[in-house]
Amino acid sequence: MIDPLILLAFIPAALALNFTPGADMMFCLGQGLRSGPRAALAASAGISAGALVHVTIAGLGLGAAINALPWLFDVIRWVGVGYLLYLAIGAIRAGTAKAPSPVAPRRAFRSGFIVNLTNPKVILFVLAFIPQFVDPARPVLAQFLIFGAVLAVGGFFINGAVGIFAGGAGKRLAGSGRAQAWLGRISGAIFAALALRLAFLERAG
Image (cartoon, rainbow, N blue to C red; front, side, top):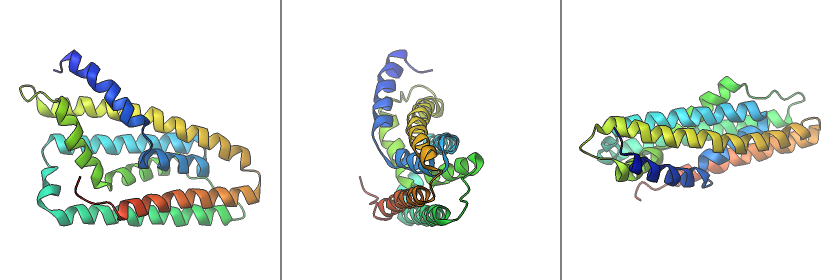
């Protein structure tokens, strides 16, 4: 279905993109600091699941809707901004609570999934990157899904590793109320910074 040589060319390109620090990596970092390695892995899995949804949409040709309807890009973007700010406030409040409770893995997965889905830049990136490796003479959707799976799996392990590292540091500091408060502020600042980044994201490019 995919030329093996094309796939061999795609894998290192995808891994290079996965290793590039970005919003997904920072989100897993924040989840790891706040709630530990399990939550970070769950958030990474949610991000990868969201990426697969974007890839499927792009493969079906629905990504053209964003280009045809500029307001749709803005609606999705501002939903993402609002959700990230909600997470930032929650992280800061949890850090100042007497007995802060970590985010459950299921909730971390859902948060990662929503954050990825509400970033319209992801589908535009998919539409710009993956077609370079797609052979139009072969089933297009199947190729999108395979290339998307490579991106998602690579992203899961790399972002998850960053979150696990952050989670280990957060776990060592969890016994200190003062450190926990700072971890909450740092996590909240990361989520707020991602919200600002998304808020000022331009559609073009």
